[in-house]
Length: 167
Image (cartoon, rainbow, N blue to C red; front, side):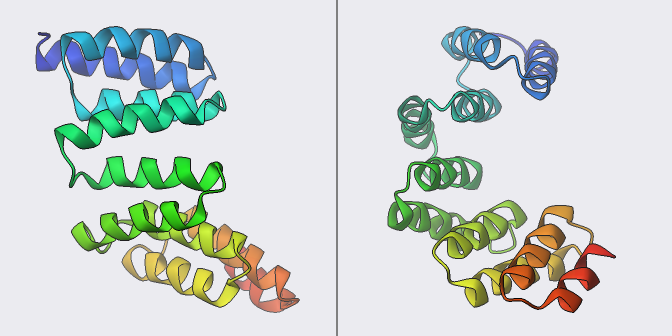
């Protein structure tokens, strides 16, 4: 087992590698770390690395293991929902996002991801509701502002779209 200090240092290294696109390195090192300590941040970063590599089945397996350790972890539920969404399993994605929101109703990432799911299903009004709810929690969330702008563009409402881009 590794200490919290060592875990923090290793996570920072992995996070930096993830940011610069060294996804294979993140996978290898995360798998090694998980053998030493099954910590939620390692499960999450491994899942994200697999998602970026397009290895969605592997990402799902990681999140299944993670959810066995803590089935009510909203980060795990969000990552599982995101992976399901990327695979085109929209109803499964919505199930995971909804479970996460029941645990943390104001979790901005899930609200945005649920908005993205609704937008992909051409349910633009529902998508806008999720994005706007995230902005009520934090009016400076760039992803929400951009997503709202995209929705209004798709509806042909360019003035409203510009309003959100100018925030």
